[in-house]
Length: 406
Image 1 (spheres, helix red, strand yellow):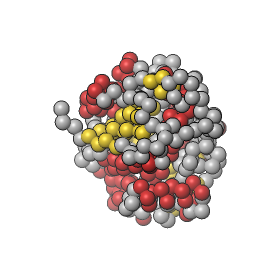
Image 2 (cartoon, helix red, strand yellow):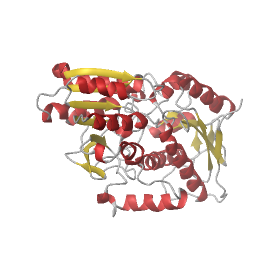
Image 3 (spheres, one colour):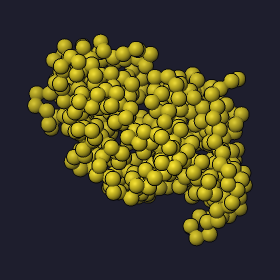
Image 4 (tube, one colour):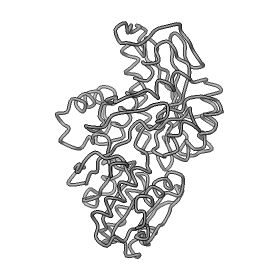
Protein backbone atom coordinates (compact mmCIF):
# COMPACT_ATOMS: atom_id res chain seq x y z
CA UNK A 1 0.00 0.00 0.00
CA UNK A 2 1.48 3.31 -1.07
CA UNK A 3 0.83 6.28 1.20
CA UNK A 4 2.11 9.79 1.50
CA UNK A 5 4.44 9.05 4.37
CA UNK A 6 6.61 11.47 6.26
CA UNK A 7 8.78 10.26 9.11
CA UNK A 8 10.64 12.62 11.39
CA UNK A 9 13.39 11.38 13.70
CA UNK A 10 15.92 13.59 15.40
CA UNK A 11 19.65 13.09 15.33
CA UNK A 12 20.96 13.58 18.85
CA UNK A 13 21.68 10.58 21.06
CA UNK A 14 22.66 12.34 24.27
CA UNK A 15 20.26 11.34 27.06
CA UNK A 16 18.65 14.09 29.08
CA UNK A 17 18.80 13.08 32.74
CA UNK A 18 15.88 14.54 34.70
CA UNK A 19 17.13 13.97 38.22
CA UNK A 20 15.63 17.13 39.67
CA UNK A 21 12.44 17.36 37.62
CA UNK A 22 10.16 15.41 39.91
CA UNK A 23 9.63 12.69 37.32
CA UNK A 24 9.54 9.28 38.98
CA UNK A 25 11.83 6.72 37.35
CA UNK A 26 10.70 3.36 38.68
CA UNK A 27 10.82 0.06 36.83
CA UNK A 28 10.62 0.65 33.08
CA UNK A 29 7.32 -0.33 31.50
CA UNK A 30 6.58 -0.17 27.80
CA UNK A 31 3.71 -0.78 25.41
CA UNK A 32 3.97 -0.84 21.62
CA UNK A 33 5.69 2.28 20.33
CA UNK A 34 8.03 2.84 23.27
CA UNK A 35 11.54 1.56 24.06
CA UNK A 36 14.60 2.72 25.96
CA UNK A 37 15.55 4.82 22.94
CA UNK A 38 12.35 5.82 21.14
CA UNK A 39 8.74 6.95 21.41
CA UNK A 40 6.67 6.46 18.27
CA UNK A 41 3.71 8.80 17.69
CA UNK A 42 1.22 8.67 14.80
CA UNK A 43 -0.72 11.46 13.12
CA UNK A 44 -3.03 12.13 10.18
CA UNK A 45 -3.39 15.58 8.66
CA UNK A 46 -4.99 17.02 5.51
CA UNK A 47 -1.94 17.96 3.49
CA UNK A 48 -4.27 17.83 0.47
CA UNK A 49 -8.00 18.27 -0.08
CA UNK A 50 -10.54 20.90 1.07
CA UNK A 51 -8.89 21.42 4.49
CA UNK A 52 -5.31 21.56 3.21
CA UNK A 53 -4.75 24.99 4.78
CA UNK A 54 -4.45 23.05 8.06
CA UNK A 55 -1.49 21.10 6.66
CA UNK A 56 0.83 23.64 8.25
CA UNK A 57 -0.22 22.26 11.66
CA UNK A 58 1.27 18.84 10.85
CA UNK A 59 4.42 20.43 9.46
CA UNK A 60 4.87 22.58 12.55
CA UNK A 61 4.33 19.63 14.91
CA UNK A 62 6.97 17.68 12.96
CA UNK A 63 9.40 20.59 13.40
CA UNK A 64 8.59 20.72 17.12
CA UNK A 65 9.57 17.07 17.62
CA UNK A 66 12.75 17.61 15.61
CA UNK A 67 13.58 20.42 18.03
CA UNK A 68 12.81 18.20 21.03
CA UNK A 69 15.06 15.47 19.63
CA UNK A 70 17.81 17.98 18.93
CA UNK A 71 17.98 18.83 22.63
CA UNK A 72 17.99 15.18 23.75
CA UNK A 73 14.44 13.93 23.30
CA UNK A 74 11.89 13.23 26.03
CA UNK A 75 13.54 11.68 29.09
CA UNK A 76 16.38 10.64 26.78
CA UNK A 77 14.16 9.03 24.14
CA UNK A 78 13.91 10.24 20.56
CA UNK A 79 10.39 10.97 19.31
CA UNK A 80 9.58 9.37 15.97
CA UNK A 81 6.63 11.31 14.53
CA UNK A 82 4.87 9.63 11.60
CA UNK A 83 2.38 11.91 9.87
CA UNK A 84 0.24 10.78 6.92
CA UNK A 85 -1.96 12.70 4.49
CA UNK A 86 -5.63 11.69 4.83
CA UNK A 87 -6.95 14.52 2.64
CA UNK A 88 -9.74 15.18 5.21
CA UNK A 89 -11.38 11.98 3.97
CA UNK A 90 -12.77 9.73 6.77
CA UNK A 91 -12.29 6.43 4.85
CA UNK A 92 -8.66 7.39 4.20
CA UNK A 93 -8.20 8.28 7.88
CA UNK A 94 -9.46 4.83 8.90
CA UNK A 95 -7.04 3.14 6.50
CA UNK A 96 -4.04 5.19 7.64
CA UNK A 97 -4.76 4.98 11.36
CA UNK A 98 -5.07 1.20 11.13
CA UNK A 99 -1.66 1.26 9.45
CA UNK A 100 -0.22 3.41 12.26
CA UNK A 101 -1.65 1.22 15.02
CA UNK A 102 -1.28 -2.27 13.53
CA UNK A 103 1.81 -1.96 11.33
CA UNK A 104 3.82 0.96 12.72
CA UNK A 105 2.66 0.06 16.25
CA UNK A 106 2.65 3.63 17.53
CA UNK A 107 2.27 4.32 21.25
CA UNK A 108 -0.54 6.76 20.48
CA UNK A 109 -1.98 9.03 17.84
CA UNK A 110 -1.71 12.75 18.48
CA UNK A 111 -3.47 15.74 16.89
CA UNK A 112 -5.34 13.79 14.23
CA UNK A 113 -7.19 16.60 12.50
CA UNK A 114 -10.88 17.00 11.74
CA UNK A 115 -14.22 16.14 13.33
CA UNK A 116 -15.49 13.75 10.60
CA UNK A 117 -12.09 12.06 10.35
CA UNK A 118 -11.68 11.58 14.10
CA UNK A 119 -15.26 10.37 14.35
CA UNK A 120 -14.40 7.63 11.86
CA UNK A 121 -11.62 6.25 14.12
CA UNK A 122 -13.19 7.06 17.49
CA UNK A 123 -14.58 3.61 18.33
CA UNK A 124 -11.61 1.81 16.80
CA UNK A 125 -9.08 3.67 18.95
CA UNK A 126 -11.07 2.93 22.10
CA UNK A 127 -11.58 -0.74 21.21
CA UNK A 128 -7.82 -1.03 20.63
CA UNK A 129 -7.12 0.96 23.82
CA UNK A 130 -4.70 3.24 21.97
CA UNK A 131 -4.62 6.89 23.13
CA UNK A 132 -6.21 9.35 20.68
CA UNK A 133 -4.72 12.43 22.29
CA UNK A 134 -5.35 16.15 22.00
CA UNK A 135 -7.31 15.76 18.76
CA UNK A 136 -7.40 18.77 16.44
CA UNK A 137 -11.14 19.37 16.64
CA UNK A 138 -13.37 20.97 19.24
CA UNK A 139 -16.34 18.62 18.98
CA UNK A 140 -17.84 18.03 22.42
CA UNK A 141 -17.73 14.24 21.98
CA UNK A 142 -13.97 14.15 22.70
CA UNK A 143 -14.61 14.89 26.37
CA UNK A 144 -16.53 11.76 27.41
CA UNK A 145 -14.15 9.63 29.48
CA UNK A 146 -16.84 7.21 30.65
CA UNK A 147 -17.77 6.13 27.13
CA UNK A 148 -14.43 6.83 25.40
CA UNK A 149 -11.59 6.69 27.96
CA UNK A 150 -8.85 6.68 25.28
CA UNK A 151 -9.83 9.92 23.50
CA UNK A 152 -9.16 13.49 24.66
CA UNK A 153 -9.62 16.86 22.99
CA UNK A 154 -7.54 20.00 23.37
CA UNK A 155 -9.24 23.22 22.32
CA UNK A 156 -12.47 24.71 23.72
CA UNK A 157 -15.39 22.64 22.53
CA UNK A 158 -17.53 23.94 19.68
CA UNK A 159 -20.73 23.70 21.74
CA UNK A 160 -19.36 26.06 24.41
CA UNK A 161 -18.02 28.48 21.79
CA UNK A 162 -21.37 28.61 19.98
CA UNK A 163 -23.27 29.23 23.23
CA UNK A 164 -21.03 32.25 23.84
CA UNK A 165 -21.77 33.68 20.36
CA UNK A 166 -25.51 33.17 20.85
CA UNK A 167 -25.50 34.97 24.20
CA UNK A 168 -23.47 37.85 22.73
CA UNK A 169 -25.90 38.23 19.82
CA UNK A 170 -28.94 38.31 22.12
CA UNK A 171 -27.26 40.92 24.33
CA UNK A 172 -25.91 43.16 21.56
CA UNK A 173 -27.96 42.92 18.34
CA UNK A 174 -31.34 44.63 18.38
CA UNK A 175 -34.10 42.69 16.55
CA UNK A 176 -31.65 39.97 15.54
CA UNK A 177 -32.53 38.00 12.43
CA UNK A 178 -29.92 35.28 12.22
CA UNK A 179 -28.63 33.45 9.16
CA UNK A 180 -26.48 30.34 9.65
CA UNK A 181 -24.09 28.67 7.19
CA UNK A 182 -22.97 25.25 8.38
CA UNK A 183 -20.66 22.51 7.14
CA UNK A 184 -22.93 19.48 6.85
CA UNK A 185 -21.15 17.06 9.19
CA UNK A 186 -20.54 16.44 12.90
CA UNK A 187 -18.32 19.52 13.17
CA UNK A 188 -21.03 21.82 11.84
CA UNK A 189 -23.80 20.13 13.82
CA UNK A 190 -21.90 20.49 17.10
CA UNK A 191 -21.68 24.26 16.65
CA UNK A 192 -25.32 24.39 15.51
CA UNK A 193 -26.62 22.50 18.55
CA UNK A 194 -24.61 24.72 20.90
CA UNK A 195 -25.88 27.82 19.13
CA UNK A 196 -29.51 26.73 19.51
CA UNK A 197 -28.91 25.92 23.17
CA UNK A 198 -27.42 29.38 23.68
CA UNK A 199 -30.40 31.07 22.00
CA UNK A 200 -32.85 29.05 24.11
CA UNK A 201 -36.38 30.44 23.76
CA UNK A 202 -35.05 32.85 21.10
CA UNK A 203 -34.10 30.06 18.68
CA UNK A 204 -36.84 31.41 16.38
CA UNK A 205 -34.57 34.37 15.66
CA UNK A 206 -32.80 32.08 13.15
CA UNK A 207 -34.53 33.04 9.90
CA UNK A 208 -32.38 30.95 7.54
CA UNK A 209 -30.13 27.91 8.02
CA UNK A 210 -28.18 26.56 5.05
CA UNK A 211 -25.49 23.89 4.71
CA UNK A 212 -22.66 22.97 2.35
CA UNK A 213 -20.59 19.87 1.62
CA UNK A 214 -16.79 19.88 1.59
CA UNK A 215 -16.99 18.70 -2.03
CA UNK A 216 -18.89 21.85 -3.06
CA UNK A 217 -16.82 24.22 -5.23
CA UNK A 218 -18.15 27.37 -3.50
CA UNK A 219 -20.72 28.59 -0.97
CA UNK A 220 -21.80 31.53 -3.15
CA UNK A 221 -25.39 30.32 -3.58
CA UNK A 222 -25.75 29.80 0.17
CA UNK A 223 -24.59 33.37 0.90
CA UNK A 224 -27.11 34.70 -1.63
CA UNK A 225 -29.87 32.76 0.17
CA UNK A 226 -28.80 34.16 3.55
CA UNK A 227 -28.77 37.75 2.28
CA UNK A 228 -32.16 37.31 0.63
CA UNK A 229 -33.61 36.02 3.92
CA UNK A 230 -33.23 39.47 5.46
CA UNK A 231 -30.76 38.25 8.08
CA UNK A 232 -28.84 40.98 9.89
CA UNK A 233 -26.65 38.48 11.79
CA UNK A 234 -24.44 35.82 10.15
CA UNK A 235 -23.08 32.83 12.07
CA UNK A 236 -20.37 31.38 9.82
CA UNK A 237 -19.61 27.71 10.68
CA UNK A 238 -17.00 26.93 8.02
CA UNK A 239 -13.40 25.80 7.54
CA UNK A 240 -10.94 28.41 6.12
CA UNK A 241 -11.45 27.75 2.38
CA UNK A 242 -15.21 28.29 2.62
CA UNK A 243 -14.99 30.97 5.31
CA UNK A 244 -12.90 33.12 2.95
CA UNK A 245 -15.40 32.53 0.13
CA UNK A 246 -18.33 33.48 2.40
CA UNK A 247 -16.71 36.71 3.57
CA UNK A 248 -15.81 37.68 -0.01
CA UNK A 249 -19.27 36.89 -1.41
CA UNK A 250 -21.05 38.81 1.36
CA UNK A 251 -18.92 41.85 0.48
CA UNK A 252 -19.61 41.42 -3.25
CA UNK A 253 -23.35 41.42 -2.50
CA UNK A 254 -23.11 44.46 -0.20
CA UNK A 255 -24.48 42.35 2.67
CA UNK A 256 -23.17 43.68 5.99
CA UNK A 257 -24.59 41.62 8.86
CA UNK A 258 -23.11 41.33 12.33
CA UNK A 259 -20.71 38.51 11.42
CA UNK A 260 -19.65 35.77 13.87
CA UNK A 261 -16.92 33.44 12.58
CA UNK A 262 -16.06 30.14 14.27
CA UNK A 263 -12.61 29.99 15.86
CA UNK A 264 -11.32 27.24 13.56
CA UNK A 265 -11.25 29.79 10.72
CA UNK A 266 -9.85 32.74 12.65
CA UNK A 267 -6.39 32.66 11.04
CA UNK A 268 -5.52 35.98 9.46
CA UNK A 269 -3.24 34.27 6.92
CA UNK A 270 -5.49 31.33 5.98
CA UNK A 271 -8.91 33.03 6.03
CA UNK A 272 -9.00 36.80 6.33
CA UNK A 273 -6.24 37.74 3.89
CA UNK A 274 -7.66 35.47 1.14
CA UNK A 275 -11.10 36.96 1.89
CA UNK A 276 -9.71 40.51 1.78
CA UNK A 277 -8.89 42.41 4.96
CA UNK A 278 -11.27 45.22 3.94
CA UNK A 279 -14.07 42.66 3.68
CA UNK A 280 -13.23 41.22 7.11
CA UNK A 281 -13.59 44.36 9.24
CA UNK A 282 -15.83 43.96 12.28
CA UNK A 283 -16.04 40.16 12.22
CA UNK A 284 -16.26 38.66 15.72
CA UNK A 285 -14.67 35.39 16.82
CA UNK A 286 -13.60 33.66 20.04
CA UNK A 287 -9.90 33.19 20.75
CA UNK A 288 -8.01 31.17 23.35
CA UNK A 289 -4.51 31.57 21.89
CA UNK A 290 -2.47 34.69 21.28
CA UNK A 291 -2.86 35.89 17.73
CA UNK A 292 0.53 36.41 16.04
CA UNK A 293 -0.74 39.48 14.17
CA UNK A 294 -1.80 41.24 17.40
CA UNK A 295 0.87 43.83 18.24
CA UNK A 296 0.04 43.74 21.94
CA UNK A 297 1.94 40.44 22.17
CA UNK A 298 5.11 41.69 20.45
CA UNK A 299 6.95 42.08 23.77
CA UNK A 300 5.36 39.02 25.38
CA UNK A 301 7.96 36.42 26.42
CA UNK A 302 5.95 33.49 25.01
CA UNK A 303 5.49 35.21 21.67
CA UNK A 304 9.14 36.22 21.42
CA UNK A 305 10.23 32.65 22.18
CA UNK A 306 7.79 31.28 19.59
CA UNK A 307 8.88 33.80 16.95
CA UNK A 308 12.55 32.93 17.44
CA UNK A 309 11.68 29.23 17.35
CA UNK A 310 9.80 29.71 14.07
CA UNK A 311 12.77 31.54 12.55
CA UNK A 312 15.03 28.60 13.38
CA UNK A 313 12.78 25.59 12.84
CA UNK A 314 10.31 26.81 10.21
CA UNK A 315 12.27 29.43 8.23
CA UNK A 316 10.16 31.15 5.60
CA UNK A 317 6.83 30.11 7.15
CA UNK A 318 4.07 32.73 7.32
CA UNK A 319 4.06 33.78 10.97
CA UNK A 320 0.71 35.55 10.61
CA UNK A 321 -0.94 32.12 10.39
CA UNK A 322 -2.31 31.31 13.83
CA UNK A 323 -2.18 27.60 13.02
CA UNK A 324 1.53 27.68 13.84
CA UNK A 325 0.77 29.10 17.29
CA UNK A 326 -1.81 26.36 17.79
CA UNK A 327 0.57 23.59 16.69
CA UNK A 328 3.35 24.84 18.98
CA UNK A 329 1.05 25.10 22.02
CA UNK A 330 -0.52 21.65 21.66
CA UNK A 331 2.88 20.07 20.98
CA UNK A 332 4.22 21.62 24.19
CA UNK A 333 1.31 20.05 26.07
CA UNK A 334 2.05 16.65 24.53
CA UNK A 335 5.73 16.95 25.41
CA UNK A 336 4.87 17.73 29.05
CA UNK A 337 2.48 14.75 29.15
CA UNK A 338 5.19 12.41 27.86
CA UNK A 339 7.69 13.82 30.35
CA UNK A 340 5.32 13.07 33.23
CA UNK A 341 5.19 9.43 32.14
CA UNK A 342 8.84 8.99 33.14
CA UNK A 343 9.85 5.38 32.37
CA UNK A 344 6.27 4.10 32.51
CA UNK A 345 5.47 4.49 28.83
CA UNK A 346 2.34 2.37 28.77
CA UNK A 347 -0.78 3.57 27.01
CA UNK A 348 -2.69 3.43 30.28
CA UNK A 349 -0.17 5.66 32.05
CA UNK A 350 -0.08 8.07 29.11
CA UNK A 351 -3.84 8.60 29.47
CA UNK A 352 -3.48 8.86 33.26
CA UNK A 353 -0.92 11.66 32.88
CA UNK A 354 -3.00 13.42 30.22
CA UNK A 355 -5.91 13.41 32.69
CA UNK A 356 -3.92 15.00 35.52
CA UNK A 357 -3.08 18.54 34.41
CA UNK A 358 -4.02 21.22 36.92
CA UNK A 359 -3.67 24.92 36.08
CA UNK A 360 -0.92 24.07 33.60
CA UNK A 361 0.34 27.18 31.88
CA UNK A 362 0.88 26.32 28.22
CA UNK A 363 2.84 28.87 26.16
CA UNK A 364 0.73 31.15 23.93
CA UNK A 365 -2.59 30.54 25.66
CA UNK A 366 -4.26 33.87 26.44
CA UNK A 367 -3.60 35.28 29.93
CA UNK A 368 -5.97 33.71 32.43
CA UNK A 369 -6.41 30.49 30.45
CA UNK A 370 -4.75 27.29 31.67
CA UNK A 371 -5.00 23.56 30.94
CA UNK A 372 -7.06 21.57 33.45
CA UNK A 373 -7.94 17.88 33.21
CA UNK A 374 -8.95 15.08 35.55
CA UNK A 375 -10.18 11.48 35.22
CA UNK A 376 -13.68 12.92 34.76
CA UNK A 377 -12.75 16.05 32.77
CA UNK A 378 -11.28 15.52 29.30
CA UNK A 379 -11.63 19.14 28.13
CA UNK A 380 -8.10 20.62 28.57
CA UNK A 381 -8.91 24.20 27.46
CA UNK A 382 -12.35 25.45 28.43
CA UNK A 383 -12.21 29.24 28.12
CA UNK A 384 -12.21 31.83 25.33
CA UNK A 385 -12.21 35.60 24.90
CA UNK A 386 -14.14 37.40 22.19
CA UNK A 387 -12.27 39.44 19.59
CA UNK A 388 -13.24 41.78 16.76
CA UNK A 389 -11.23 42.14 13.54
CA UNK A 390 -9.98 45.70 13.08
CA UNK A 391 -7.38 46.90 10.59
CA UNK A 392 -5.06 43.96 10.12
CA UNK A 393 -5.56 42.05 13.37
CA UNK A 394 -7.95 40.77 16.05
CA UNK A 395 -8.67 43.04 19.01
CA UNK A 396 -9.69 41.25 22.21
CA UNK A 397 -12.60 42.61 24.23
CA UNK A 398 -14.59 41.61 27.31
CA UNK A 399 -13.64 38.97 29.85
CA UNK A 400 -12.25 35.46 29.53
CA UNK A 401 -15.37 33.29 29.45
CA UNK A 402 -16.46 29.69 29.63
CA UNK A 403 -19.98 28.46 28.94
CA UNK A 404 -20.79 28.71 32.66
CA UNK A 405 -19.77 32.38 32.86
CA UNK A 406 -21.72 33.71 29.89
